[in-house]
Image (cartoon, rainbow, N blue to C red; front, side, top):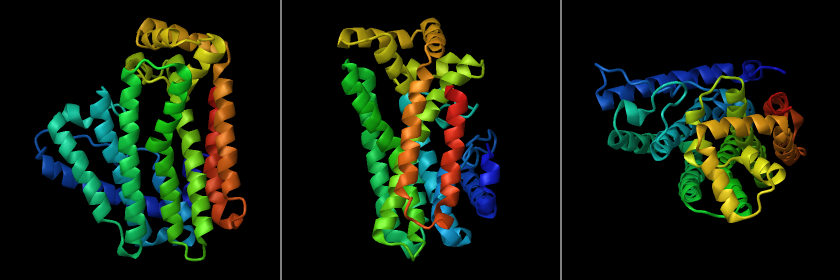
Length: 333
């Protein structure tokens, strides 16, 4: 399985420039928060840059231009701002191994910082594609907010699992898949040879890949706990979020069919000892293989969306999809 670094090699120069821009932005944030005596760890320039990479590859030969890099930087800033706000809403105890911003600063300062990052991201979009790109990004932000409202309701409400599954898929689409789709669409705008239908095809690729990416991410944290790599208290399940592996376990293995039993299952997920036992049972019952089927279906649909477009333009996007397909097979089997 080729590493992401190898897949990213055609855009590495662009990603290096993007990381330099993010470092400068971090310094700007430090000045705003007046954190000279107590350095703030932003982790803004860390991570796989998957969203930026999708945009850069979707732009085709334009991926080395300053305008594309600035747009990819804006996308990373929007994603980071969403994490700042998510950590506050979810009361997360850590982010990439460090304290989240609201614990380093304060809730009030972090809220302001998240809003500031969002506005700066939109301001920095190049004029050449500003109207279409800013409209797309604003729609993402609004849908993310709606998705977060839905997720908060899912934590609080006692609903039966069929409705919960529908809501869960909808939240994943609004909070993750739509951003993936829009960044592929925005990247494709830099390629003037593409038609409107082809721009839309790039968006469908990103949306389907984004769903697969989120389902894999939900499964990865359980695999990490089983391997002793992640502590149980930071799990989504401990916050009342029932992700796809748990839903499949509840429906296919436990045969849960009533709102009352599903509510009890959600309470069990918040108990660390019970959650560990559930993870062990999920592995024993091969629940992850049912998740793999869903992931692979979305990846297939993603690649089908771009099947009619010149393979030289889509090859690197397919390589990213194949990388995560193989990663999901390794984790889920």
